[in-house]
Length: 127
Ligand code: FES
Image (cartoon, rainbow, N blue to C red):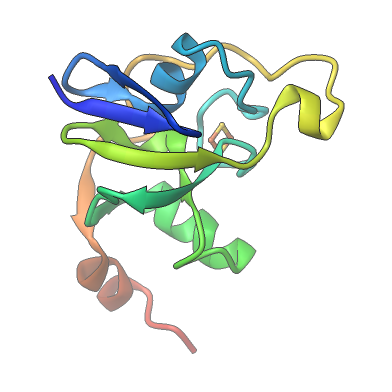
């Protein structure tokens, strides 16, 4: 089982768990205002260790559009498949939301395919 460390707390999680749900299971009110569809970026986390090398197309495009590539990852688009250390950046408390957002599915949405960044950049080169 991979070990997930969030804001200094470590827990073993089931291999392949969706990162945003694993964080939520720790009792952290992380945002997921679009319901885990790579649209809102409120589930953003900063990786301190174990950042995956692949992205869903939806995550890559959203991060690029928002100018957040190389800064954060979208935890609704990341599966915990090895040890990871992350910092949660937007929570119910920090943002003053009434709720964290709609329920997030256990599987990746809108698509499950994950690709290397080089492949994604080849699809849509930076201008
Ligand atoms: S981008 Fe909205 S929950 Fe991840």
